[in-house]
Amino acid sequence: MTDHVLGLDLGLAKAGAATLTADGRIQTWLKTTPRLGETATLDAVADRIGTMAGWAVDLTTTGTILAVVEGPAHAAQHGQPHERAAIWWLVVRALLRREIPVAVLAPTTVKGYIAGKGNASKDDVRRAVALAWPGQGLARVSADEADAVAMCTAAGDWLGWDGPWLDGRRGVDWLKKAQWPERDEVRA
Image (cartoon, rainbow, N blue to C red; front, side, top):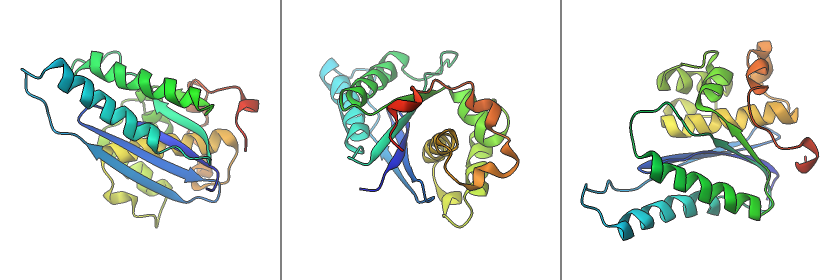
């Protein structure tokens, strides 16, 4: 498998993922699970968490040189933060056990890097991703996939890969806000 970075926008109901190679090839995925009712059993909730975490980890290959995970949205007042945290930690732990270096980008960093402002809307991020990668069909991806592509784009920039995101270098200051692994841990 060609060396690539993997971007993960993790969630309970849906999650987005993307890979980016050094030569600019992008692939995206979207995973959804049915909503659980308020009377869902612990078993059902645990299965849902395991399904989403397993899906994300199963996207890794021997070519995955860096995984970029969107950090938790601590200020979010919606969703199920306890369950989302479980997915996040299961995935990060599994990646580290596979000796895949992990970078963490806060949601505001992802938005700021790709769209120029930390409070950009989902549509702003989708547009910015499509503009950064013309001809890749990214105007049609979900918001979750767009976030994953934005994280891959930031990782490619951090790694020094050539790419369209370098035009104007608007995202460089945002890269400093991310939690990156030690550079020598990433083979590239």
